[in-house]
Amino acid sequence: MPHSHHTTPAPEFCLARSCHAMPAPENHPPTSRHGTAHAPCSKAVGFWWATSASSKESLTSCDSSLDAASDSDTLSTLPDDSKIPKPQGEPGRPGCGGYTLESTLDWNHNAYTITYRLIDEHLDTTKCASAQSPALIKVVRNKAMVAFPDLENYSNVWPVNDMIMMRLKYTSSRARRCEIKAAAGKGMRTRSLK
Image 1 (cartoon, rainbow, N blue to C red):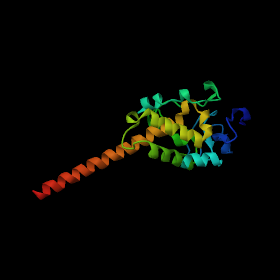
Image 2 (image 1 turned 120 degrees about the vertical axis):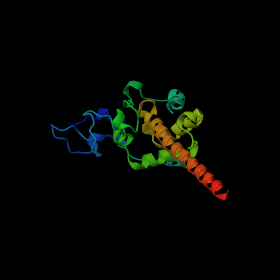
Image 3 (image 1 turned 90 degrees about the horizontal axis):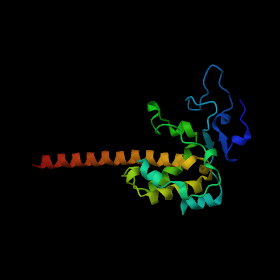
Image 4 (image 1 turned 60 degrees about the vertical axis):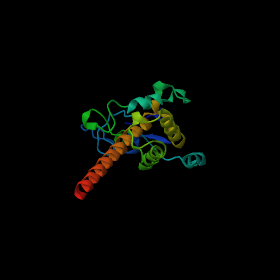
């Protein structure tokens, strides 16, 4: 089924289905390159790293806090109803009615790496998203939008919010495990000295 060009939000974007040319047989649901089924009119979008000098220069130079740092004061040229909506469910939980960012967004790996680097540089990775400063979350969101201007096409910049939440959930959990392991090891040494 050909897609009209008016559904493409920006020149850097392409609809995920049109990036993978072979149409699905009529008796099988369309799938992404990861083998997961998606709706025939999916708004999953892939994009490529912008190579503008300003993007490169700017990179060098739990949900409540993400909502508090929303883009209410971020300028947008698109009306909210034309933006790509956040999928239903929780990110990272496809078996429980949620979705995975990788299959929903179909971005290249470099986009995730750059966004994770921004999160690691500006936020306390030993704490979850709800324990972060809304101002620092906003800094990450704004820098991600400078690096990837096409994020403006997503309602409330939800991909960045989801990446922040998932990254901090992972890193804070890892920090707690290391803390527990260190405390257990310290307790073992103390008992062995007695």
